[in-house]
Image (cartoon, rainbow over all chains, first blue to last red; front, side, top):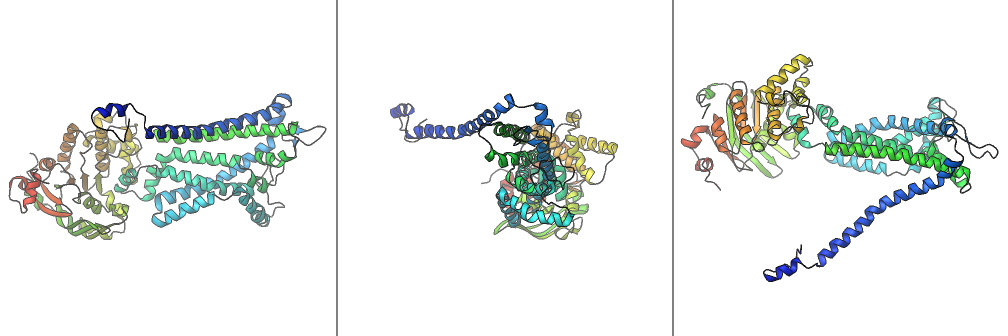
Length: 311
Length: 263
């Protein structure tokens, strides 16, 4: 495999049998990228093992499945009778994530369709850059917007006592997830070959007919994957949700109720717990739950997106 | 050696397409210029010429696909059924009257049935029985019905290349076009399928006008009533096809090309 100084004649045989500089460079690069690639897996496994180890004590010794999953009472700091029911926290996370998706899906799908199918030239490029910039806004900034701008607006417009609620956090989280979902949805639309569009347009189809009948069906797996990744993002988001929900343990009756999310509970309470204590371990148990749900959501998103590449 | 009977008849039938002083350019590069020709109803009009002759650009200008190619500029006059296509309010209506078959087959990523029913549905036909009739008729005319009648629900993009090309033709026919344009339809198709499609085209000329762009001169000779020879962005010669091969030619390059002495 010597690819440089292969001499003709008798020297050729020797060259075929000699490992030259390029051969060693190739092997070294292979080894380095292998380590980089494998380290991602090692880190993820390591984190999973750590979280499980910390939470396992609670699951084995203290956890009552019925209490943990089916009661809404979360008062871990009660010295005499601490209660660990995460139903209200799950309801908080679910309601905020659900509302966020209602906000984000139409927005991001519309934006992606506009960018990929209708906009052209400079408009398209500008929009793409802006969407990526939006995706780069730190979540604490979004939380700040929820706290300082949305809060008084909701109080004023809807005449409610507190503006930190499901509505506030849902909108903030929706706006946060929309740019990422837009990017992924746009990639999915771009993956549909142009010859399909050209063939359909040649038949006299309008842009919208092409989009609706040809491009969207062809891209539907990628779009669904994008939505699922958005769900995963919403589920795991912490800071913005902590700041905008009101952080009150509560099963919401309306979108104006304050709630508390699973992630925010960990963020807010972990610093005050005794390392290795019951409360500390209970929080890690929530961590295991979050890890599993996010993992399943992302994995299914990945499988769905892969499905379209093969099909 | 069929279809020569309309040699004189073609000239008598009405003009379907009239092109005057056509010039197509991409930025500073001129793809085609100085084209003046008329295509009559129910004739097969062949266009031959080597790569970069401007054949595909010509077709794109006819159905206003230039809007798809940013930077493509078309000057001159193109009249379709007497109407100036350069100044239409609704290019979609124009395109729906013109069926296009591309060099590489494009089975849209939907079922065989939906591929053919797409255009009728866009025209507003929703009745299932009526669509069934159209789908069967178009697939039959494209010589594909027997092969796919038991799997109309299969994805169009999963058919073989030759089948997809006939599906593309069936889809073009489902538009009930006035004009059918085929752009080197046989480059991705085996010889047997090519001959079947050629037979289909001979029958179709009863109903539609056909423009056949091909780089196989013998294909033009087999099918076309009249043929234009494009070379390096100009239209060198237009004439009754057989004359290009055996009769008088205005330009020596035409005879050289059809006899394969070129280059």
